Length: 322
Image 1 (cartoon, rainbow, N blue to C red):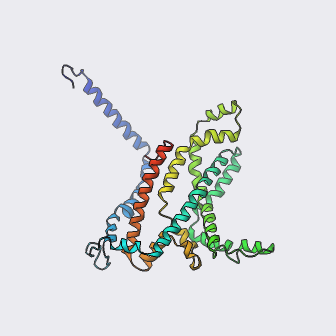
Image 2: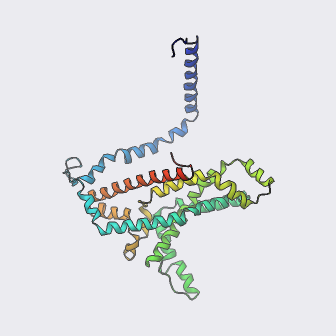
Image 3: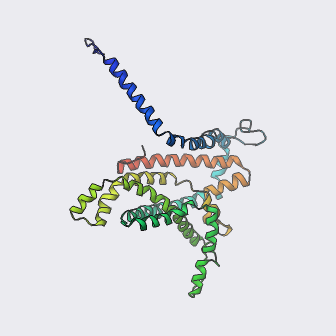
């Protein structure tokens, strides 16, 4: 407080009363919505037990780990396993395949849920809209083991698609054994499974757009396509930016289930990715230190990519995660 100024009478009581009201309002809010916070218990426990509690295990990457002596009693070897990984041809092959599949998914697969959400948002018939949404959402809830069986029923040399092709006089297409065709099939199956779930995110963002903006545009004579491009897309650009940042941040990693289910010995040159390389070396061959070294390097690269993508997005569009 400056010299010569006096504290107003009752100001302390007013400030205390304000803090008390804020605290009471916060407690009332928690009591009213306690069920939502209770639902967070299991996710928090999951991340604590399987992510944060396991973090000290990254030191395995710098040790010659022996399961019988334990993590802390195993000898330190420094960067030895990182050097071995850097000199491994199968590792660099898996890096190349991971980047190719992720870039393909980013360039071609990323816009598809946005386009689908834009057109779904324009459907006026509620029943038809809900039916389409249900159909495209369902694949997300099917496990990859089931999809693997379905995939072979459709894409195998004696599968449904090749049976139809041969019925019209064509030759069977080696979807699962020819390398370029395998990449195409991988992309199609991945988009089919994920496009509906990703569409939900953009449709949710569209529900927050003020409908009065659309009404004003209709009065001005704007077509539905013009409203889509001039109103809807700009209003969800923040969501698009966040999803793009997360997609770019995951460029150095790829899911394990789809590559593992779809790959076979004839397409390993294009189908072996980092996650399957870590599984093969770390679990099948028991070289846990190399597997941990690859995973640690992968996480570090993804971290740098997320930071860089967020900075570029904020500079270009003004939108970012933080």
